[in-house]
Length: 575
Image 1 (cartoon, rainbow, N blue to C red):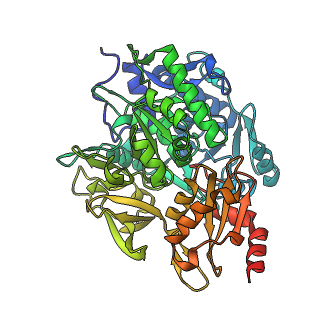
Image 2: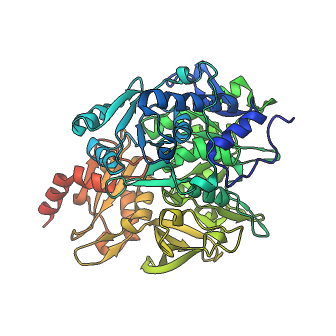
Image 3: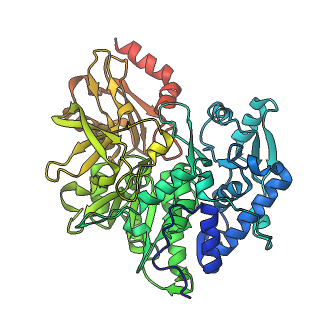
């Protein structure tokens, strides 16, 4: 038998725990994921977890749930009861996700970056009563428990070593897709960009639809935009993950991609800032190269390029584009960079795409990843084409004009439900979350390529729109990106809704003053309408990093709340 399945098995209607067990039985030594042994010292190397080890740990966790949370009667094993976990970036997220399903529960992995009020409301909404605590909990955990006033029971979660210590008996799991397809498999949550995060249930049927989405047949003359993360023939699918495990994208990286595509996630150590994230990514890549061994099953490769793709957030791209020496180190060790969760400035993207493949990933909590395609003969380096994506036609997206911006038509993406008669009955995952809808706005805005009508550039979110007191409107995303692309500017946020004119919250890089970067702001002003231009007396210089969602986008409502007094003073003194 070969070291790994080739091609990777496509089983849309196999429950994930059963799929894991099947692969583990046939390919026990196949690696599932790699994690740093020490979150602060990459020189201690990686711990490599095989499919067989993960499958055994899933059984161990299911038995642990029975003994510590409560064994459910068979008729109650329907995913209605929820367990909550917030912990460090390790393999337990995958084990807990799959093991809870085996025991008849489901997991909720909230982002610890939110405050206790938002997290408490999220947990209350999903009616979760048990919180699993890691060895070193996040500070917000104690606040949540205190505010629950005894409504939430805290249990010490099993450690990685406990889960992987010894072989256990297989937990009885006889469910089939046909009997439980509408039961929830996991609870994720929205990003909370414009308010509190909201729970979203991914059912087994949603996962089956997502499996179809990831494996849609290609139109003639096209290839998949995300081919670097897939194991197919000579593609190894080695994905270096720099993001957190608790957002929807984290579940894709740690659970769905390994099981549905054969991707092998290799995790770097998390960094608290873009600079730290980049530096730790480089350290991970250099360690992998120094070790000169990237193993896939029993195969060993020694190469300058040690991963096929590095998965990053837009802030990572913006930072590394300003630091060419660090970019050199990354492109030397990887075949591509893949970003998601927001847009990247044209300036930064042009720098990156001149050196390596740059892939734009688009998705949403309810739909999951949007499958995007590109022409096999297309050169994405030309004329900023890297900014554009071509959605797979099976998504059935309609781009409807909503306004004009700088002389270009702005379109809103609306997904229309498939009739279920084509492509093996494919209906988009979105409509598993909204079964009564025939269409739904995705909340994303796009500009159409003037040269390729089937290519679209993300232009922000519908809730990004600023509506001034004059009722004049402005989409600030591009202006914010252009401002933040200056080497002296770390972050920028334009404010204006229900205000007479625009203001700017900006965080400067160390050693820079507002005067040092003002020329860039003036350059952006020239291309903005009069009411959206920022004058120097309408700037707040932030001393702390912007508040971010789990996927790295700015929490705008929270930012406006944090700087409400400064903004009120700014506008009060301006008139």
